[in-house]
Length: 305
Image 1 (cartoon, rainbow, N blue to C red):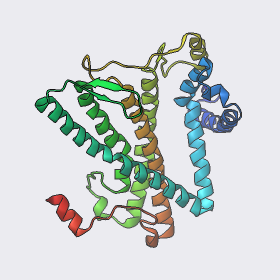
Image 2: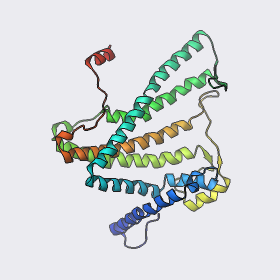
Image 3: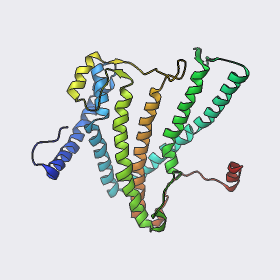
Image 4: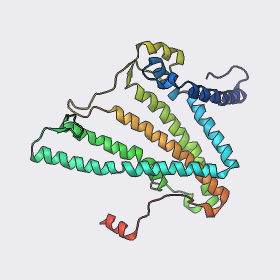
């Protein structure tokens, strides 16, 4: 939505925000009642409309309004916020624990490549587990290892955050009271994590689609211009590799960026709500419902060895 005309400065900005929040209810109702207008990708107009709204101001205010409503309801009914925290943390833990196995697959595939290339002098690998033969050069499988690494980095980030595994630069945090720690965590989630993730989403959304369709769509394009482009839009999935026979599905890395932002945004809000509820309910609620991996002494010794 365009910024409304009228009083300038802060008043005009606040009016613009209120108008967009009110418009979010209309946008949600329209999306629910007209799914074919943005989900039917066989229709080019539906496709470009989906691309536009996925990184638009309207989508931002839809998400903002949803979390404002959740917060208001959660203040009234605390179990609603705890429910959100439990679902998001379960989701982050489940995805992270599953895709952490990509690290093992990466090691096994690298070992296989070394043996086939250096010992058996094989130049390509053919696989046909479902009746369809898949043949690629050994360099393709070698470059594909980057995808496994990207999976671990992007899809295990929320899991690592939940487990408390991220590095902290602690200058004052360890010496302050519990209450102040909660305030710092809430402030950091709301004013550091969320804005960075929103900007990353808006950039990476159009970054992805510029490598999937032509003509390229820019974040600065207005809806009427994008709709005019719909008549000439066609799929043009990026298949360029770093080497002639190398891995050529680099658009998957761009999908992983969006997956990372989506999961970390949900986790940022869950972190905010968790600290809010722990502050509200007292020390007895610290780490309530928190599912963290437990390392025994034997396990730590084995890992060290």
